[in-house]
Length: 383
Image 1 (cartoon, rainbow, N blue to C red):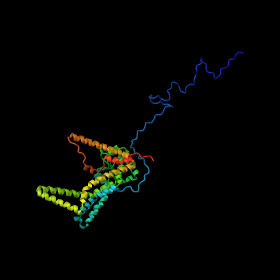
Image 2 (cartoon, rainbow, N blue to C red):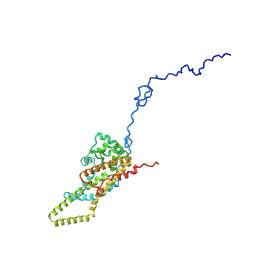
Image 3 (cartoon, one colour):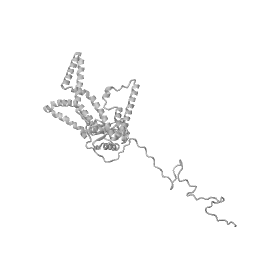
Image 4 (cartoon, one colour):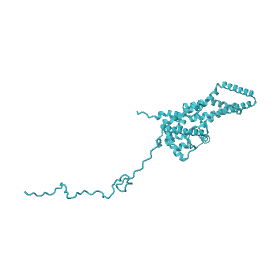
């Protein structure tokens, strides 16, 4: 039977004589690819072009502070007098009693039997510590502070509000001041409502570290350190002035007696010694406490600094405060190094700090302050 050729099936493979044809590409071969090659420049404009990516944000500072406004819970008791403040007042008590005696003696010639009115009037002047206009005058004339400019307020006020919000304190209770000092990292808490900061601290510190400095000063106010110290010094002022007058007169008498004769000088020394012994006996050794008071006040001042550090750490500023302390320590070391170089160039040696100077220091050293911050710097174990 003759074979009849079968019609070609659609599934047969194409003949090698016929070229294979593929579907047309969705875009012309001459067109550039939709995604650019690496390093080929910006992508072309068109429906498939990749939009330009926004630049990566700058890394945040480790001590950046969020100052977003939120609800604030104010404590019912926003300030108190801790053991440090009460200790300062107790140490000033001998000065206070001597001041009462001095004021009474000065009031007696003018008021006679009503000399107690002069003492009461002098005691009432202690209330000026919390008088706002008097504080402003003292801030300008005594402390050398000024009001912040609008630019400084825009930087300082949000940070201060964050600090007081964490402490549960009304931010408007205290007044912010500026000290024109572009070299020292420092701040001050004084009287009843003064909080001052240097221009160096305001311009160089990030928000978190500036908040740590302000929280430290707020700790002095909350613990009563600022008003207790100022009140003690104010009530001790008449006694201090009387002591300086007596010391000046004593030195003058000894100088005059020494110029006359050795015997006269000896008699004056014996007379002054008898007077001093009689005073000690009459006042039950009170003047001896006055001689030891500067060392006790320095010790209380160092304790007050540690308590203010702990207040700032409890508000969450321990790492920031530690960074500030490191900066202050480095600045002190640099200043001491420069002083040593200057002394070496002059052919002398820089004197070592004496034990007496350490006892009279009102601030603890860097290592002591960091040691007391360790409980807040160490990571807490998971619960």
